[in-house]
Length: 153
Image (cartoon, rainbow, N blue to C red; front, top):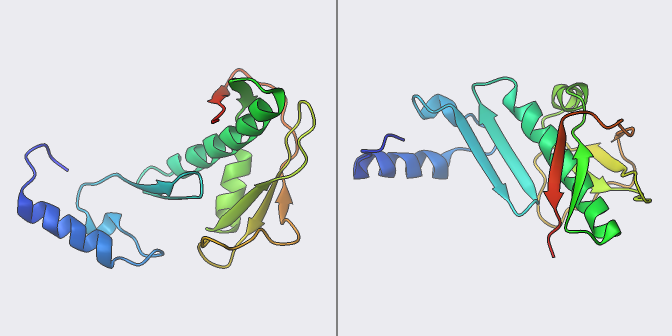
């Protein structure tokens, strides 16, 4: 939104946001907007963008943050450095299905397994992780690009 946004523009934005379905495009209704992001407390994230690389980058960062959080808690340290997965993983996930659920698997001393399951529709609060994961991400060697995650206490 421009810095000099009017009340009418804000009303129109509220109407668009309030009436667009979860699987419908918002950006096509928002003129020059480049990104739509919505998320809540690590429970879910919705990203719509005109930049084709951004969803995979956000997903890679979220996976690294989940792993970092688990390692920091296990080590009882305030932070943990973990590598972001290579671009193949989030790109494969997005190409396979638009909706995913992730849960921590085994977390020994220095390795985190994240179980991922494709969902038929958007995840809803209270929906448990499926009995069987569709994909288990293999461990990645440390690279120069890492994410530092501060543990939440």
